[in-house]
Length: 487
Image (cartoon, rainbow, N blue to C red; front, side, top):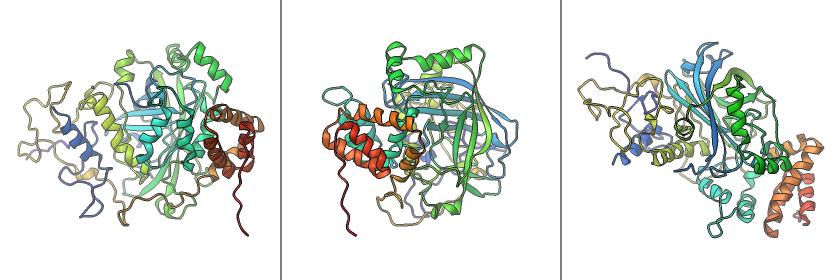
């Protein structure tokens, strides 16, 4: 038989085995992170396109990623295999909770989504401008987003919904502290850092793995609005950041970030003082310092917003050989949720849109569905295995094994009661002026919530740092009720 081309996902990522689902041991259960299984079934379910639920308003630009330091000792990813190598890239920045018409200056996290068009398929890194998130389990995500949207009765934003959920979710206090600090209102998309947020796994050519976290440090310098400036800009020019990015690039300038990685030995995960897979926590740099390895440069504007920005679709499930997943509960849920959202929003064949296509022709057996944009496989077989020399699995690209053990149970992380330490550390790092602005921003937003919700939330700030909680309570005019403990 002649040499066969290897089978790929719709994004050109090699498929190592098309006959067996990814399971925890030979008898299962099947793992949600089997993105090839999910893509295959979800596409089939849609073979017989709305505004994004989150990240609705965004701006995008084209550019490239360049390797600046050798990381081949840690990863076999082809796009990282040589210093000086450049890979085409596309970035989309966005607000998170607001609708498509929301102001760019709104107090909101900013999406930081990247698509690398590598020779091994598209690699999507879908993060934010913050290193942590509000929740650490994907099962909470729909509820959380509902509270950031509109009241189902009044159709207006509701401070009671917002703070009721957060005050009952102590793990959110770290991200809340970031959101209501100066970092909650970035001045432009160029003047903010980006993070992969989740823990991922890098695997080298010998099969040895390490846990990693990505950091993108802006070369333009950090610039934020004050709360008053952000409110003023929302009324005067709600598209300020969108226009800034476009005009900056149109003038011949670049937007650029230095890209670094934190690296943790696999064996450290079980004993590190924070669970390294909990996305509500960071790895302190003194424990795992930043190691620079690349540079992201944006230098070309889209020709058409709808075709290139609105129809761009990013998913954490799109990883390339040499990059793998971690047990992060939020990441595991996003592996399914993101591509499923795109299939609903753009259709089952969204991978065929020009902005989402890999640099080579995908090879698989997916057929039909609304808006098929190519020859639909022409006369080639639409099933596998077959005896017609169709694309076949490529065991060479198998993911590294991950030892999984334990009983089937719904449970949290091993140190999930340790929710306040890092929020307190962050508060104590702030200047006195920054602390005052943080407290003022919180008081201004929380004062519209019911008193019992305010009291509950203030205690989270107090547990993080007594001064922090006391100042917010004073601003709200409520009394701190510190629990009395015995000797």
